[in-house]
Length: 251
Ligand SMILES: C[S@@+](CC[C@H](N)C(=O)[O-])C[C@H]1O[C@@H](n2cnc3c(N)ncnc32)[C@H](O)[C@@H]1O
View: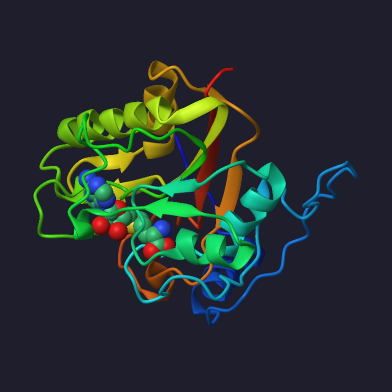
């Protein structure tokens, strides 16, 4: 015989308090203590695996869908100090070019909006680059152009990954030996396909293209994301970051 567990009024009240405090609190910034980074010879000591800064910098157009802050690109260029021009094959509002202009570095860039298809196996410049900045669409999380070659228009995940793989092979082929490819990518939950581990696929496809990972992932806090201001009826664990993967063409 089983008997109903008596309700402990203390725990009932506490449960109620937890439920109301967590749900009724107005949204606002939360301050977290970051681990201390070891001192080292880096020319950019604040560039660690946690890119938490909330200032995007005055680069590109913040109203462009998928615009990323330029400060991370600036810190990467100051850290790696690549020789020769920087290449941004999916330039959007021109954030990377603006950073390069500020640093006095030459920049080659293109975007599907200008008719340049970075996923075309024969479409890349013949020039080799010591540093490529890539910020591709996170499949169809946002759509960019009406052009069917736009990666965000890929009708299935398989097709997206196939064209994305070609893009990464193009990048691998355009690097100098020892050259770096910095890819900013995010995982997200698609309304039909479910959770998409796109950072995993980035690494998998890049390794298949002959690249190796150069250093730690950089977790970039998503300050200012439009989704942060939305209210959802369903429960989920919000993703508040995207991930920068730095890949290298072996020398
Ligand atoms: C995440 S956005 C880049 C935003 C950019 N980092 C900025 O700060 O403005 C992705 C870009 O990839 C471009 N794109 C999509 N498919 C492409 C393709 N096949 N070839 C070249 N560019 C493409 C889109 O037009 C869009 O501008």
